[in-house]
Image (cartoon, rainbow, N blue to C red; front, side, top):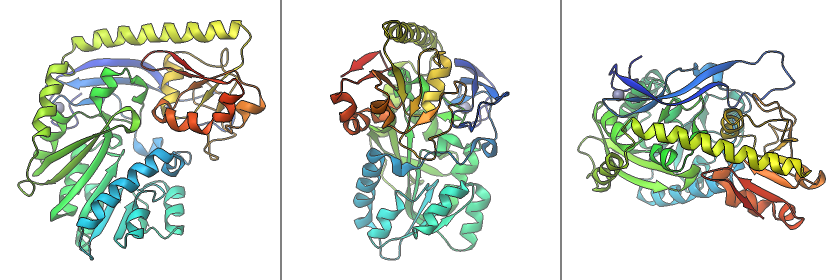
Length: 402
Ligand SMILES: [Zn+2]
């Protein structure tokens, strides 16, 4: 194995989670055979990039059930705030391109501000929804070839957005090269990705699933961009997904580099995320958390409580399967997404219902698998809580919310 970013051949296994089902591969019925793949994070000794040992081809990973961004109010608001900040700085003839534009949840804000957009998304059903809503969307994977094709058509971008997609693309160098090709001389790219330092610090191991090939920190990304004549010139830390990076990238020397870039790298070095021994303690903490959560659930079940889970998310697949929590404890899972309802969860084969079932079936406790949207979910589920329902937060320590 070699590092997918810098090519170095010395990588160390840091977070081995074992054989896991594909996180978003919801089932239509109880299958006799379900695919499982090794899920293991390696750390590059040279550039410090955390990456999966085994990569499942993207074409096998994408299904019709990948989540629509518009289902999350928190993400919608975050996207609108960002667009409203950038829009006034753009010229009238500006073009904004979004990679993995989903249903157009972000780009529609630019359209409302009178700015031309182009979305790129590989999921056919989702690209179709976007086009129907008037958001010009190409149905394709983003790659160097696609970028060359757009560049030949003189489709250069003033701004490129790439939210929660770069970590999914195995060909990281092709992805960065594509950005380089498409950016106007003074253009910039805004990239959002969950922050690896938060994954380590807050025990957010369930952010690890096969779709996420990379777990980004500032040091390896800065190096990767510089290798393509780009420069990471600013960073914002945002609260989304348990702690994310919002990275601002432009052509080398086109933007003044802010002190936060060096400051964050120094912090990363001091925190120990580039040292192997950090992960020996990490795996011990994970096993401790597993024991704690399973014994809390077991005790409640023993007391005759009815327990379900909230959020048929990719995170939930990792958490339930790694912790071996399934039908013996949970009656079902609820999810707001109507495309997921009626299906079954990967590995654990729990039926997915609408959130209203928490009340209808008199659930006592709901294990909150989408802890990254905990405030939003708890606010939406006030009726459940009012009727005595309680949420169990699994991370970074087990906590009951009533
Ligand atoms: Zn590397």
